[in-house]
Structures are given as C-alpha cells and as structure tokens.
Length: 147
Image (cartoon, rainbow, N blue to C red; front, side):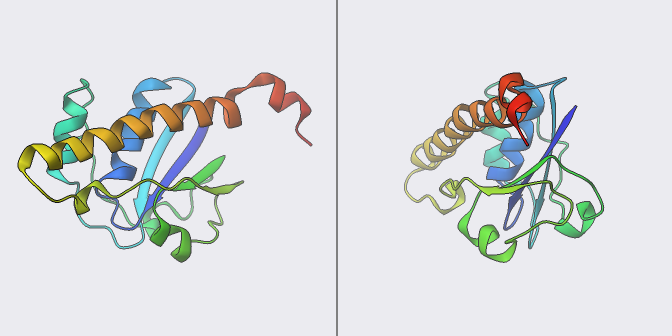
C-alpha cells in the first residue's frame, strides 16, 4: 500500500480533510497521514463538512511534522503556501510536491458562507487529490515506465 503525507501549517483544516478523504476514497490502496508545521487543533467546521459526506474525522488530531519525521512516505504534499515555504523538503518522502488550496478557516461572512467555503475546499480536495494520487501513485502504466 502506498503512503502519502499531507502537510499544512496548522494541520487543522485542509490536511485533515485530505487525510480523511483519501483514507475513505482510496481505502486499501493509499494510506494517508497529515501533519503541520505549527499544529493547532482540528477545526470543528472541517469535522462538520466531512460528516456531511459520511466521513468521520472527529477522532483525528493535529500532529506536528516531528511526530511523522521518522516515517517513510511515497509522497508528501504541501497543501498551503506557508507549509511549502517551511517544508521545502521532507526527508521521509520519496517525493514532495505542492498542490495549494485556499484556507477555509480564513473565510468571512455569515455562518452559511463560511460553511460553504469549507465545502468548496473539501470538494476541490476530493476531486483534485484523488485524481492526482491515482495518476501519480496508482497508475500501473506510469509505474512501469518510471526510472
């Protein structure tokens, strides 16, 4: 099974949602983990919008990159510009790439507008990350031509 690490600054929203989505959508093929440069706590709205999809991330917790530094990953993905700057490399990853997504925690407006921002990021994460991981880690033709 392939292993992927999602990195974000606080490990509170995007990386937590990505971990939950990949562990749900690519179960048995990819094991996802997440960590942060300066971990906080999992954002309650992230838990809420994931529950809307039937995915429970309520038991996940924010982790520091130090907690996973000795793990080996097939791929590490930074999901925010700050994490990309602070983690230009990750020693335990065969490869590190950046796929930036907006921070829904910075959304303003009504409760519904903020929840909508979280849903939009969740849906973009699902669409883009599942396709990316299928192409980069699971595509047998690509794996056979890799040097």
